[in-house]
Image 1 (spheres, rainbow, N blue to C red):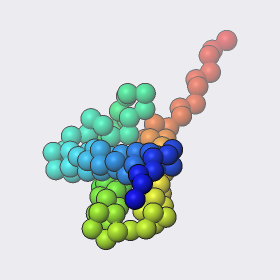
Image 2: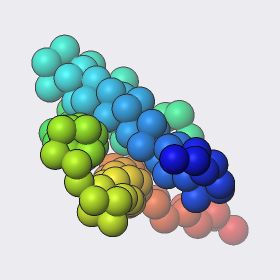
Image 3: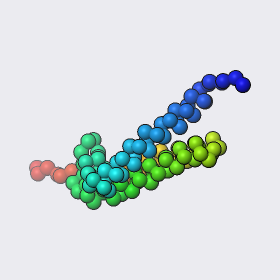
Image 4: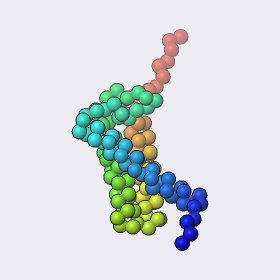
Length: 121
């Protein structure tokens, strides 16, 4: 059996190995929000937290928890249950996009665009 290394194989391994740190950071962030009550990373926009981070903490924590469990389940599924390539890449891709779009929506709601004040003439 010949070892075949091409771009497709390398990208597949990058995606699979990238799930490990993503799952770790997402689950760690959920732990910090729910257990340690640390709201320093909640809905940041340009490094600034919202005015009331406690209000947005459950949403951010739940999003991170769900995404972390989905990534962990994908890793377990590949290793122990031999998920086919199409299945685990779909789960991984949807999880990543779900997390990115969810973070964007929460951040946009936590930092509303304030109308500009009119200058007195």
